[in-house]
Image 1 (cartoon, rainbow, N blue to C red):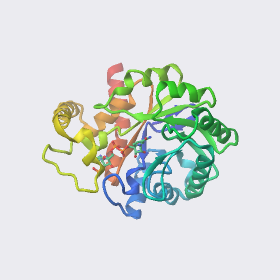
Image 2: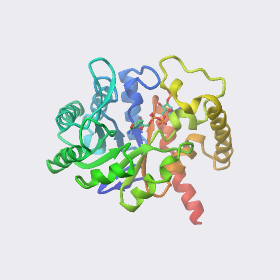
Image 3: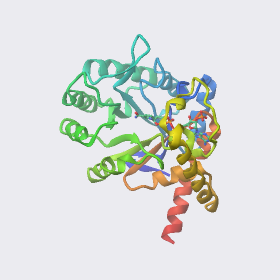
Image 4: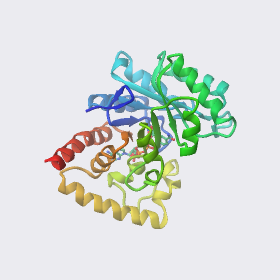
Amino acid sequence: MTTTISELRISPVALGCWPLAGITSGAITEEAAVAVINAALDAGVNHLDTAYAYGRGGESERLIARAIRGQRERVVLATKVGVYWDASGALKLTGKPELLCRHFEGSLHRLETDAVELLYFHAPADDAPLAETARFFREVLDAGKTRAVGVSNLSVAQMEAFAAECPFVACQVRYNWLQREIEADILPWCCAHNVGVVAYEPLALGLLTGKFTRDHVFPPNDWRRQSPLFTGEAWTKNLAEVERLRAIAARNGCTVAQLAIAWIISRPGVASALCGAKRPEQIRETAEAMRVAKLLRDFDAG
Ligand SMILES: NC(=O)c1ccc[n+]([C@@H]2O[C@H](COP(=O)([O-])OP(=O)(O)OC[C@H]3O[C@@H](n4cnc5c(N)ncnc54)[C@H](OP(=O)(O)O)[C@@H]3O)[C@@H](O)[C@H]2O)c1
């Protein structure tokens, strides 16, 4: 099953390759990460999403290159620049063309490719005017080092300013059943401007798989400890919502994760959901959401 962002033919379920760097919820071996990528490709996922910042030295990009050696043409590769780890280990934002250029050249090197299919500006930064940043992306596009440009985490006003200097076809933002803030402005803007929404954290960091209970304790190295999704009253409310989804999923013969992903990739304007995974069976399960979405659509149409 494929959909398009501009002329790129992508699977609506993409593999989000951030967890493969071993930072979000603990370490993962290189072999296990490569197995996840191969499981994704075998399950019909051709869209791999990464970034320079996914790993303190771009590990996610390096792992992707290793996994797709000899099968580069099967893959729509998306990466991002604009967020990086500095020498002290802090996560930093930049929109400075000279830094972005250096980081992107590093990405191409790690990905073992001359060009990617989609290059995103990762997040707004205050160290350079947005127009200057956008002109850097325009130059990369004109040089043929990316087939298309995307933006991530920008407001509508920032997207308008960026678009004035550089055409872009994808907008990557947080979007899932529990977190729908983009429906107020970003999603309608993207629909009106023919920009594909690429949803990140579509499983709400795993909450929408239905595997967590109220008494779950995350280990110290798990980023979810700090997430407002998993604390206080919100967590209680979210767990109740998951139970509601579990009943709907059971009626439709699918899992909670598949229902959550099928819902999101069926939303008008959404081009793709970036499903993170730590194990092959996880992406096999979420990739099945493409079939579930089609079944639900056929059912509606019938
Ligand atoms: N542009 C941006 O600023 C931005 C920000 C965040 C993310 N992203 C992109 O979006 C992607 C997705 O975000 P994410 O990976 O943070 O969150 P996510 O997709 O909502 O959740 C992924 C996590 O859920 C668990 N999981 C996944 N499938 C499962 C299954 N079938 N059964 C049980 N558990 C399952 C795994 O963690 P455990 O096994 O450890 O529970 C996995 O690491 C990233 O990989 C990245 O590509 C972009």
